[in-house]
Image 1 (cartoon, rainbow, N blue to C red):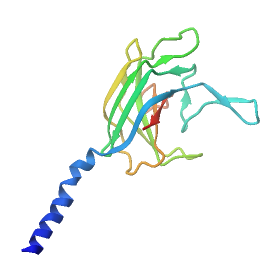
Image 2 (image 1 turned 30 degrees about the vertical axis):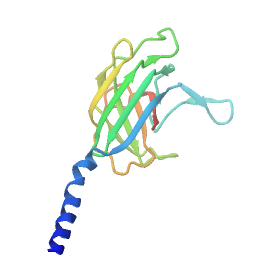
Image 3 (image 1 turned 90 degrees about the vertical axis):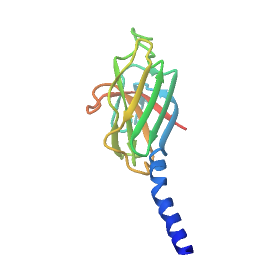
Image 4 (image 1 turned 120 degrees about the horizontal axis):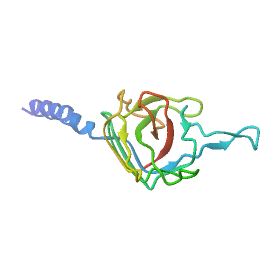
Length: 168
């Protein structure tokens, strides 16, 4: 009887945590860092594009009032962005038309890592947007050195980054 009880408990422990694992967080971000088009280059005092994981910056500076992102182990993603606006140039204070989330895993240094995109969503005139869906392809677990960018353009294309998520 004890062996049967232990076997049943082991079975329950294996089967029931699986749905809970799908709800586990792979990566979370709270707040965002707006893109600046240039960074210091080498040799000193030489400007270079502020490229992040192979993605070019959004041209002019960009700012965001609020960003909250939750990526689940099964690839589901929830993003709420508020106030994604141009932070410079003649069109200062205006928004972009469409954005998507791009998650990078297992990168760092010169390594870009694996790339996982959400679907494109519209951004309103205030720069507010919401993404509820999945990233494709499904990210690895664990996702080492995760970086999340909010990017314009088609999700399969190159696009430019506007905001980097701040890990929570």
